[in-house]
Length: 269
Image (cartoon, rainbow, N blue to C red; front, side, top):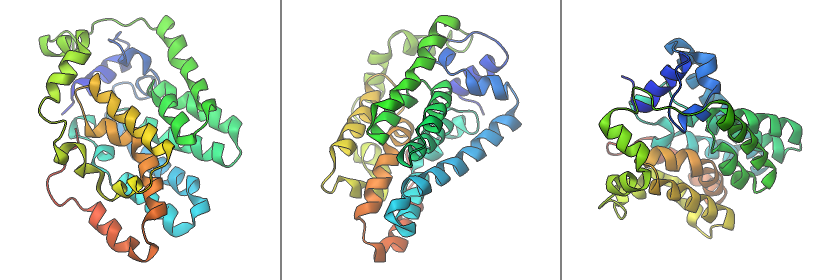
């Protein structure tokens, strides 16, 4: 079953103009078109890239903590996402390529990092902003060149999906509909806190980097109706890496098991 976002990517893959911000996310629709096999191949590959990127990014911490960081991230329910974005979605692929870009930058391969962040920005326009905080360096913001150029080349149009009354209202009034979607849930711990699992250990003596990425991640909820999917793909890498540094090594196997398995039906949207 395809959700509204996935349906718009399929339309874009068929060459149909789509509404913003989907018109900016041109790369995967261009490659995958409306072929679900291609989208699934990208989805599966994204898990491999994300895992490899986290292991490389955290390699200075030692194999145990680097592995823990990868598991902590990939086990987050928001990274898995709802069924309607599997496999046709951009959050996981954009996050995966951005992680690899940051890993390259951390190991001195900044030209490769720049190339990868340009790719990530072609998948999802906000990727460079989050990657800049992950890397704690403004070089990642160079990726914003891509959506800036695409905005002038691929003008948004109200597509047949966005034209539906409910989605048209979300499109025209993003703040109002976002506040309505989260009304009464801002202090709901099962939605806003519990899905982070063991990565909440990152809040033990948090760095400014951790605090800033959380502020940016939660700020998305002011203009978007989804929650956990956006939070985890935006702040998950930093939270996982920070948590892996403070969790006791001798307890990591038990902690990762408790984190990996969901003890109740998780929030994923």
